[in-house]
Length: 275
Image (cartoon, rainbow, N blue to C red; front, side, top):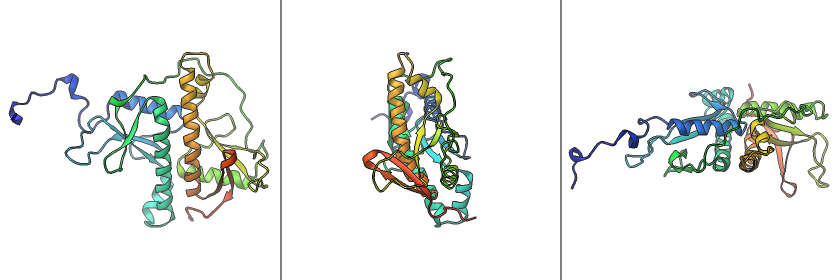
């Protein structure tokens, strides 16, 4: 039996990053993927955005050195309200927003070659750089295409009350609201006719735009275009699912029109924060 005194120390190449640190190459890949998806990256404990931090071991057998854990931090206002009033609506909203966004990350990061998983107790969403496949998806310089700005919610004639509700809900959740249909973030568009009960005045359809870089790379003739298009589709699908839970938790009245794959907002439901 080998005793601890007889074990050879690991070589520098095998040692990996020091305990309590994310592998730098993995952190860079995660940051790039999150920004390409159109989401903000949080720094430290201050939101909003995706916080990339070292995984916390569940026990002594949990070998997670260099592994990243991902959290979604909503707006400081929602976080502060949740801490000031434990057990109230703000706390529930904060937890629902975090769950929705972490689920979205787990859904779209594999399209960027970053496999995700949970620790043994389901507490942390983790990414292990050793399980990464393919290379990092990077946008080469000069790929951005000049294009006119899309129509704004005002130019589309969307109801001011609906636009205001989405603006407040997105801000609480920590999500960017696209100022026009071609910009990054939560988008608002005129309702597509469905011929069903979901068609009513005073509503708008919600969507998500990833970063310009990802969209333009996907539409280019470069070798990476097909992979970028797959990533863009994964981001859009994951974020549309997340918006339904996150914005509803932050006070928006939403409805999924499943037959038409539309997420529709009708206005404000119960306010999440009353002060």
